[in-house]
Length: 219
Image (cartoon, rainbow, N blue to C red; front, side, top):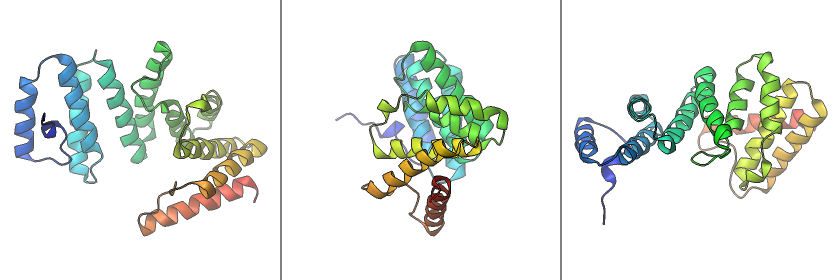
C-alpha cells in the first residue's frame, strides 16, 4: 500500500514540515509536486486553528507562485482560498480568487476541476460587499447559472437562499419570495440539516436564516 500521509496532514508542526519538504523534494514532475501542495494546503485550511490555516494559505500561495501552469491543481487551490476568505468575511479577496477561477472556466467552456459553483460564490461575495453597483452582476451570475448542475439538496438550497437574498436586496419582491419559498421547502424535505446547528451559536444562526427567508417569502 502506498503511503500518502506525508501530504495529507490535518495539523502542522516542525517535524511534519521537515517530513513534508523532504518528500516533496523527491517527488517527480511539476504535476505531482503541484498536486501534493494543493492537497496539503487545502487540508490545512480546514483546520480550526488560525495558525494552522496560515500554513495552509502559505502552501497554496507557494503552489500558485511555483507552478503557475499546473491549472488542475491551481483551480482547486484558488477556489479553496476564495472559500477561506469568504468564511472570514473578506469579500474583496474572496471575490478576486473566484473571479480568476470563473474567468478560466468561461474561457475553457468547462467547470472541470472546480466545485462547479464558483460563479454563485462570486455572486455571494458581491451581495455581501454592500456595494449596490455589484448587485446587477450578482443577479446575472445567479440567473445564468445552469441549475441542472445542482444535483444535491445542499446545492439547491444554497442557490435558492442566495437568490432570495439577491432579489430582496434588489427589491425584486415576487422573485425573491419564490426563491425564499423554494429554500424553505428544501429545508423541510432535507434528510440532513442544511443550516449550521452543531453549536448553540450555529443553531441560532440557522434559526435566524429561517426567519429571514420567511420574511422574504411573505410568510
